[in-house]
Image 1 (cartoon, one colour):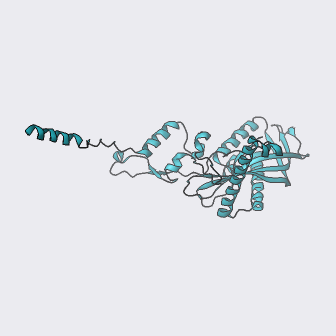
Image 2 (cartoon, one colour; image 1 turned 60 degrees about the vertical axis):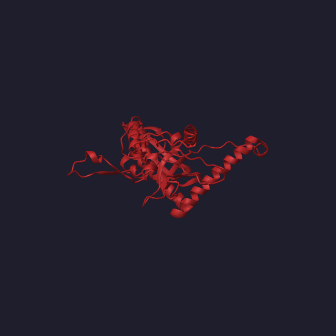
Image 3 (cartoon, helix red, strand yellow; image 1 turned 90 degrees about the vertical axis):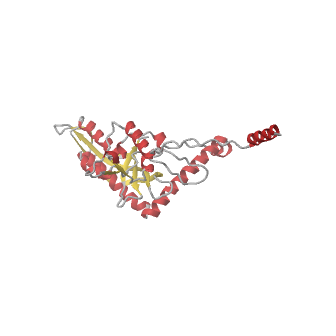
Length: 307
């Protein structure tokens, strides 16, 4: 009987579920600190004058692609801005290293421009009617064209809702900015240009002026008004937070066709290029950018496109 009871006891033990002790929990990880260290390693040689002055990889900046027929196209611009909620304060020293009488100093990161032109405009090749509607490649092209137009319409609708945008008013402002930038460039006034250009564009213009001054001592530039034509080629919205569509930048690409007068002089005041008595027809494609969430935001030039 004792052997029978022992066998039954062993059988019951074998049929019980096996409970293992839970594995030890991993130590907590400070993801913000890890990200900050990796960011510091990546850009250890960069000058933190603004996020626009840092190098970037366009393929890693664009985080969301449009799927389906939804016109909403949100782009992650530099993960540091998204993770830090745009104005998150980063202490310059850890609590363990701050002495008792020391005051903590906080650094606020504010993005004034994405620092790049999103989806730069390029002309689309015309395709015949039969190819567009009766071939697979034509259907794909039609779908792409529809999506691009939806992006244009959505960006303009957000701009109109937030700022009261009208095409005529914006074209007047854009032409004035176009004229002011070219006039200041002719005078070599880089400090005044800073207000109407983004940081990256301002750096580009400064380099161009240095190269020009090595060839010409001074130049004469004049715009013959009114402009021959102005038209919008592309409108894009660069969102910083997919939960808040108002935290975004708008970029409008305009084509200017104008008549201009130009003449360049050497150090002796002699004409070495151009003729200011003649009008020349010039076509320029400029990209204008405006924030939807900064108080007192205004239009600035963020890029030029050469076809």
